[in-house]
Length: 224
Image 1 (spheres, rainbow, N blue to C red):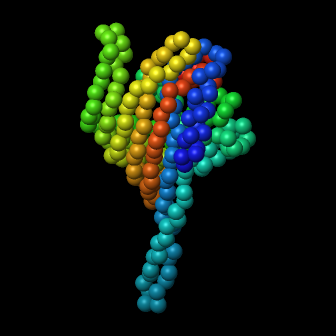
Image 2 (image 1 turned 180 degrees about the vertical axis):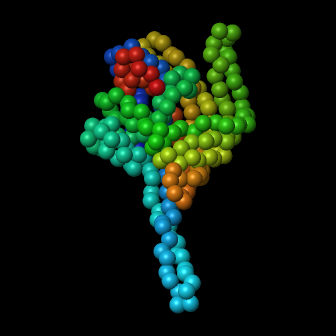
Image 3 (image 1 turned 30 degrees about the horizontal axis):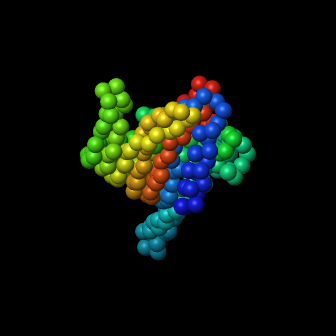
């Protein structure tokens, strides 16, 4: 896991030299580890005295970054392979963005909401600071946020109470340094599956967030 985070960070830093006009933002690799547990149809057994017995069983299927990317490949959203692709959250300088599949040299591809959505805060309690260095400066956070969130995993509605950390870093392009908000989070997720009698459990994490020039991933006028 550490090596993949490092590789992603190096990719993000390398893009600051991209030729197109810089688009300041931030990105962080997603780590999804979930299990979908589904109840199978019961097996009905006749008993000698005219009674019946129903036998129930469950099946468990892993649902991770790989399964999300493979579903995107099957939907012809990638380049025919999942090799070199990873999942990441991309945001503008104000922490507004979404989830994407990303690969060096390719335009970022939005993750379909039927596969995975980013956590949406439904309630929170913050500790830390919000600072404006001058009257006209943006307000930058240094916050630890205990958050209650909702998200969907393979169409299943999930909730979680976990931790977000909001910070600030500078993206340097030429002689200009632009402040951007960075965002990490960790949630233990649980919820109802999208069909039948099923549940979803697991974890959703962004363990590192770095400033990035968004231009290589969002060419032209595109933004996260």
